[in-house]
Image 1 (cartoon, rainbow, N blue to C red):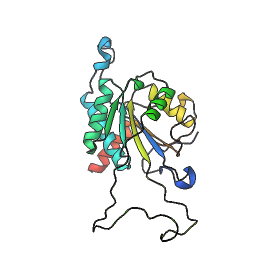
Image 2: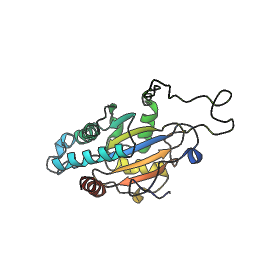
Image 3: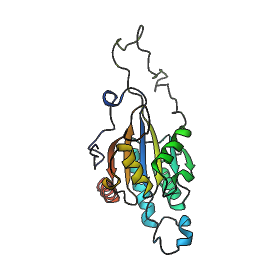
Image 4: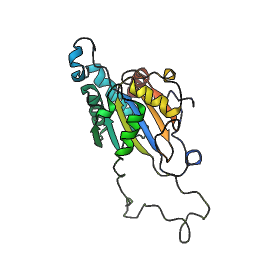
Length: 230
């Protein structure tokens, strides 16, 4: 198991030299924010909304993820209200509007295999294309070889990774993180409002193929937000 960073400024998200030039996939595993007492109305558990605390946690997570450059191509969320609200609140606070998919594949007890299979069966939308510079010049990459400014033999630029947010619950997010990095489930703890970031090479999410780059809890997010205001 590779040691996760506990602060967003500590670690990078991988490099072409380590992970290959193929497009990487980065999964952001975001647990829903606080949603009150689960035992208050157990028959209506799926309908529990976020509390004011939960909304604040989701906002902090959204802002932190954007500062980390983890703008998603798409977002997956469970069908439970508290997870869907977390996704919407985080995205709204970050000023983002990607495709959002609510799915039964993210039920709280879902297996990692089921989640990975669902993600593979529904690829993310293509990245937005913007090949025009500020003065009308093309900013697209030139081909390697004759007529190119890139010398032959130099590795191509590592393409921007595909970022996908998975917003859900305990235990399936912890199980997915452990599955991805090939570690015991007991190795991780993901409190409400926390997120983990796992990077994969061009082969995409698979068992033991991931590198955890961030694991940030709500207390750290709150401290970071307070620091930015001071």
